[in-house]
Length: 307
Length: 285
Image (cartoon, chains in turn red, orange):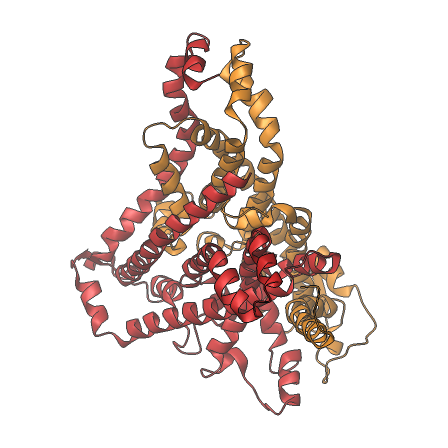
């Protein structure tokens, strides 16, 4: 039966409700979210104001001053640098590791399936709690990792409490938590690839490296892109791990965007600067998510098509 | 792939072993620490063999920790209860709001439907503090500061997009003809929704609910900003615990174990749906 005949066969009274019904169904969800959208616009307004919670009387519009002052503010450049560095390093390493592990586990076997399920456990651990776990393990007094470091000659390795190794330590925790995310996505991708090209390549005796770079990688690209952008969007906004581990310290070593905004708001009560920081971060994520959504949609259509 | 040499298999084995050690070691180690007394924990080199004790768990559950210096109150069970309550109610609310909306988006292409769906999706990727910081000021005015209602409302930011986009996919997978046939037989749209669409999408809805629960449970920043001690879930509570009782490492480990066990257990149960949920329906497992 075609859609047109369907249209005619429908019970009467259906057409009226059909026009209103979807709105009725989605309205409650929408209303709940509008309440959350309002603070977003408030943030935009705050970012153009001189607004300190400690001096509410001095609150006034200063238009772009919060943004202009960033140009000459070394703290801001530090925030930008650390955020980009953190996101770049974590995503790159997680991508390489995740791809490697996915390829190790590609063949369906009981052992491989068991390992891939086990590896999901870090991902299901709350990042804030994961940071605490690593904090206990890197404690200079009794931490097992500090002990292991001393065994390989790194006496007095300070992990997150030294400015020179703090970034390394939080990146390590991020890798521990999120590599399984990339791994599981790429594993699903690898296992969904058609087998014919690989069989043909094997028959022709094509070298492994050629198969990897010319067949596997190109076919896996949509999955890699989606996984990478997903992680990039989260990583540039990382808060839980860094805050739970070092609260942005030591000093301002790890004051990434969200941590810096949090400290600005609650410690120096500088609402204006905090809002301006969040707007800049939002602009970055908005740009990234636009690229992301296109890819994500393409992959989603494909997944639905296979269903 | 079948013609792998012995050397390659050995190398693969070594690589996989290293991977498993790196990812499992922290969980195993904290689990072991939770059964040790502070005395054993502080010993150097770290002990692999020790006499396990349940004292840490008893202290957490009774809420009283007796040390040489006196008795210390531990409010951790309160945090655990808050986590359970906040996650369960948030997911229930998100299902109640999200499933009908997902059905609307899947079945009816109405004006603005894609815009609304994408707006909801964009919440997933916006910086949380962008919304949270002004919200603290609003919540104080509205009297929602440090209330469960306020928190559950904000938790919709994580739960709703997840449920909406995953469940929408499951509804789209149901052939529309089945629903038309049922409607032609004279049933109302609500009966169709309840008797046909809901049962068919049932497993997907359950999986989305479980995932939303995991994400709500693991959330940290919402409660850190909006809740004070008596409403805080385990993620924030554990951090406060580590600073307030600085040296009770055994109890802290036990608290971490109790906090991560529910999500790990649920993840094992729902692992078939995990890939799809994590990618918001873009990749099927």
